[in-house]
Length: 319
Image (cartoon, one colour):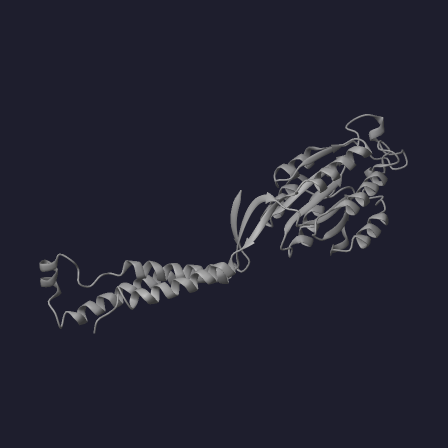
């Protein structure tokens, strides 16, 4: 999938200058023709030669319109996006720390297994991009902004602790993680690790839909790793928490599918490891940006010289 976006879309208002350019072109052409008719009978020349003595200079007009378009797009910060493979991604690890992650269906707990495999992922990641860390339960917390210091991220992962109340806000986690990646000039990837139960906030389905839309607007790819048992007694928290911890993959499938990522089931710790390994080993799928401003300015400069050559040769005005 390809698309075009603009860093400074306000400059696109200058596109209204193009109709003015066309109107001005034909107004001046008509004025020049009236002036020239004082000195020669061009209608008679046309009957003799079969050609218009005063051309409308369509080539020059089209060149000028194209030059103005290129300059406006360059000023607007045009970015061409395409889906491809890149090891130049910036990553945000978004790890669920809600109470349901203390369930013991993955030994020793979902949370401990998630932390261990996240640490291994950071160690083995070969991307030259940066890594950020977000924890989320009832609220989302930025544990580390994007950094190229793996030791910093690993320390923050090791310090993660369970939030005993507040549920799980998947939408908030996606929005917070996306915000960390807004200024990234590389491929932007979120790796979301959770049991998938979206249990915090009002209008839950609408919140997830809005989060997906926000991620797509900012060209974010989301890989989702779902941890925990689908059913059974091991899918429940210890009695003192009084909460159901049954694994729910519905939102995770939706998040990954609608942002161009992959969804992984992890009912055991080695499956978490395999999911991280697959993301790390492969050239990660990303929405890759190509900034066009420099090329557009260079092309517009070249066309200015072409236009200048035409009006001084083939379309030269004779006094």
